Structures are given as C-alpha cells and as structure tokens.
Amino acid sequence: MRRLAHLSRFRTACHGATAVEFALIGPVFLALLIAVLQVGIVFFAEQALQSAAVAASRLVLTGQAQSSSMTQAQFLNAICPSVQSLFTCSDIMIDVQNYSSFSTANYSTPTLTYDAQGNVTNQWSFAPGTAGSIVIVRFIYQWPVIGGPLGFSLSNLSSGKRLMMGVSAFRVEPYS
Image 1 (cartoon, one colour):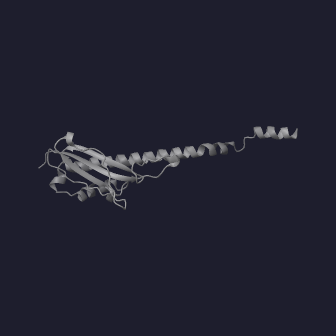
Image 2 (image 1 turned 45 degrees about the vertical axis):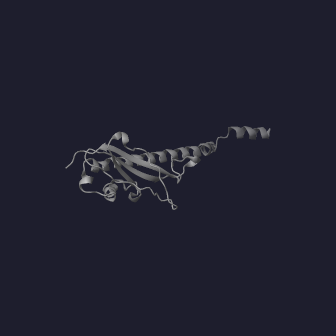
Image 3 (image 1 turned 180 degrees about the vertical axis):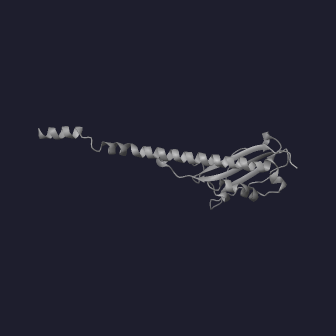
C-alpha cells in the first residue's frame, strides 16, 4: 500500500519538468540560433562587399581612375574607409579587367591558388580601360567562418573560409 502511494506521487510530480524539457530542446535551439546568426552575418558581409564594389566602380565608370592614373593600391585605398569596419583592407583582392563586349567578359568566380604558407598567389590585373570599354570590377575576399554546431558550416574553400565576391559590370562613360 505504501509503495502504491509513492508510485502515484511520483507519477503526478511535475517539479523539474521544465528543466528536463529545456535540457532536451535547448541544444537544438541554441544550434539553430547560432546558425541563423552566422548566416545573417555572412549575408550582411557579402552585401557590404558588393556595395563597396559598386561604389568603387564609379571611379572607373566616370573616368576618375583613368584620368588620375590610379594604381590598384590607390583604388583599394579609395574604398578602404567604407569597408574597414567589416574587412581587413589588405586582404581584399581587386581584379579590374576591360573587354570589348559584354559577351567576352569574365564574370566567373576565380579559382584561388595558394603557396605553401596558405597565401593566395593569384595575380590580379588592374586595367580600367578607356571610354566606351566594358569593365568588370571584382572584389574578392576570404571571410573567416566559425564552424557551427551539428556540423553546420558556410565555408566554400578548403581552408575553411568562405570566398566572397562583389562584382560590377559596366561600360565606361565618355570622359575628357
């Protein structure tokens, strides 16, 4: 009889049920929350890089870069203040190429090559073209990605980083 009373009390006891339920659901909830935050930060950074590429392209579009014989380093320094809160300016790779037509232009994501220390060895060009030429401006950045819970990762490079790219394609305006 006494045992039955203890069993019925055990069956109806609710103390600690909330803690047990949270212990079961908490890790999944936190993993989902971390994944959502990481995706949001990566999308924000990609959009910031794209906006920087479009803003910097105006220097080429209007002929300012060509008239002042701007170098690749000067071009990077011109946009650095607008992106330095998110990106390390020295790690932004800039590729500016001109073409005779849009159909021959290269918009693709570049394949990065590395040396033994893991540094990118690609040679990027800075050819802003002349009035009327088609120009593709590409800003390329390797964003460090933190491995997420449950194997979630946004990296698309073998180094565990995410390759981001901002691209702008346009025809250079007539300038004097």
